[in-house]
Image (tube, rainbow, N blue to C red; front, side, top):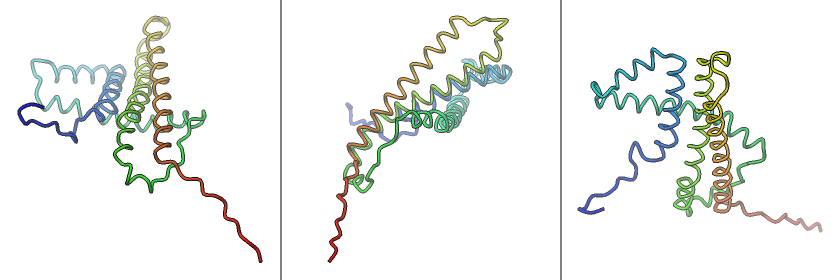
Length: 190
């Protein structure tokens, strides 16, 4: 950067937190707003342009992070389990190699695992938000239509993205931290 300014690497709101927690958390907050409209109206009125403050901005960011962390736990329970049950299993890693390969391992987290977390957390959040929205719009009052098709398409996209990025992460991290196969010990009998 020019003028001697540097980019701080370990920012509280770095890209990883934004894509893995804040964005999926916003989806969850929207879903909660579908379930409890007065609560959503209160959030919007507190954060309207007329009364926007730094405090209200941080309130929404913290609420999004909290909702995103909560949906991350649901992702771990459901999506991770489904991936493992359907054959996408973590490789066996030799963590003794991690000290000498830490930088490469962090790169793999940045270019694959954080994107996996975004796709899988967003899938979980989108499913929650869809169910919340659909609970307010009954099929008799609003038949299945474009909103449902769009929600399905987005969920399928997130599901495919989560599986692909997790597969890439497992494969590349597995190559980096592969456990060496130890040859069987031969015991000589005298």
